[in-house]
Length: 101
Image (tube, rainbow, N blue to C red; front, side, top):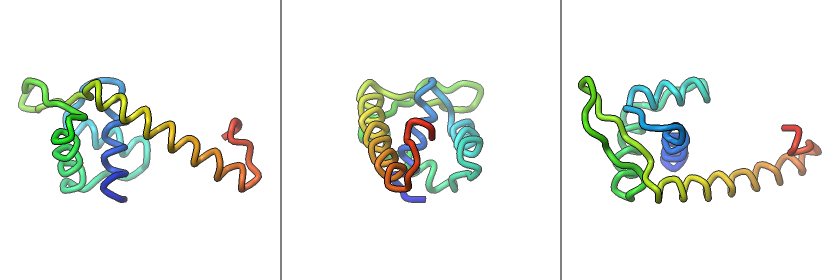
């Protein structure tokens, strides 16, 4: 999995609300069937925070949840719309109706 993929997955998991690292990874595993390695997960969190796409919240029960910023929501929406266009084009090329996917 590419670093950018890990960042997109993390942003997606945070779209419903704040989560801490373990919960993010659990949600990713439920969605994809695979967990991110600690370096991938925490590297993605660090990069996303440095870009202003997520922000840390106050510690809760020895965990530090993070949440999307307004900029993070905007970037995630742009990325997902782009991915949807690419997926639809690929499905059409395979003779699959993208609406039925």
